Amino acid sequence: MVTFWSKLPQSVDTSELMLYIGEGVSDGKLTDLDGKSTGYINSVGLTLNTTAIKPSNLSSVDLFPYSLSIVNAVSTLIEGQDTWDTVIKYNLSKNEDYEAGACGHKLVLERIDPDGESMEKTLTFGTHWTIGNNKSYSLTSNSKLHKMYGGTIRINLYDEFQGRRILLGNQAHTLTYLKAPSDVDEQR
Image 1: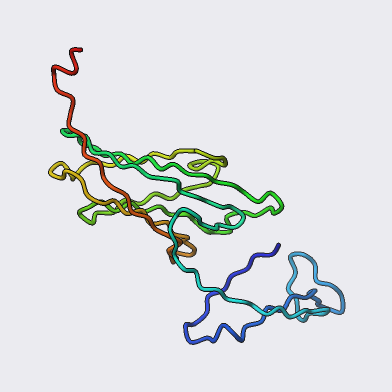
Image 2: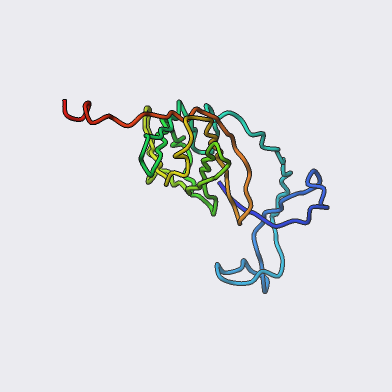
């Protein structure tokens, strides 16, 4: 598998792009690994098929070679506390037929509260999110929501490369407001 990237002006018609791969030559022989090629032989042209990424629900996200499914997310605000929590339940698998690195891509999770305030977290597979089924990931934020009694939380998932983002998918869920336990409940 070969990965490459290039910055292109927006005016370029990507349907006409070709990638040419060949063996580099200089001074009548193959170029050394660190050398500079003056020409190419045995080149092959590959048509580049561009595909538009359409954001989807996070119940099924293709992140080649990974597949992610967010099963559910629960956000909780407890009366009188300075923080609110989100627990995301997910399934993550990896196609082991391929050896692929991040290649400069970052996975960014954005959580937007009912007031429109957002919090972002850059995620790494294997560190923040592990492969397997019925896994969970928790986020905690300082609460500016102390006057809220519920609402909707939106989760957006982005692929970020060279500072530019593509929305892969999003999902909304309810913020659950829980009353603080009373002194009577705590004494039991």
